[in-house]
Amino acid sequence: VIGAHLLGAIRKGGRLASVRGVTGQRAFEEAAKRQGVELFATFVHDYDGRRDKLDLLRRLADEGKLTLRVADRFPPEEAAHAHRLLEAGGVRGRLILVF
Image (tube, rainbow, N blue to C red; front, side, top):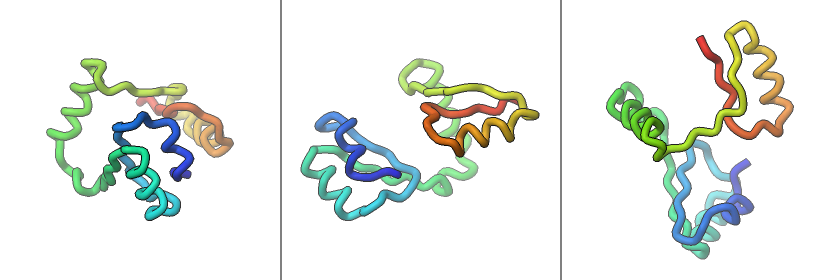
């Protein structure tokens, strides 16, 4: 759950982009303002079909400017196992299905 406790991990003057809602949105916004953290709400549907945006993300990752945390990779036949790991919690990073 994203909430005010997350702000301690962001430096003063830092930025947070979220694709999900925030628990206690108003209190979160006020706490972020006090800590000098800039918030950005991102709506995935705003970028639906925008291949240029996807390509920009790919280029940033290729250049090392956007770091990706991958916890593990799985073949499609292990998707159920990957889902169970995610449900159990404690996974740091994304679980990737490789086709």
